[in-house]
Length: 100
Image (cartoon, rainbow, N blue to C red; front, side, top):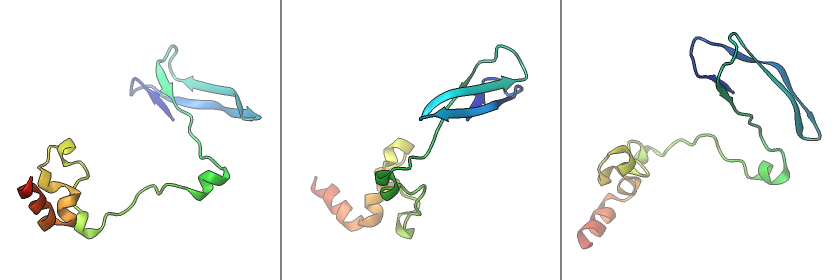
């Protein structure tokens, strides 16, 4: 992924990476302007036995009862009652709050 610091400029990978025993040997980035500042990131997907058996799902749907609730409501400036634990067991959570 290439990101330019100025939206009017374009960057592209002119010569893809070549690998020799896992070592990056060539990466050529061309732009429509000289001396462009930018950043780049190379990502990949592991293909070993452990990674293949333990893939993380990209996205999981929330159960209907948890929709509209947060794992960490304070991070979103939401009241404690918008936390997932309130959605899962509102009466038990309320009793814990009263007892505390």
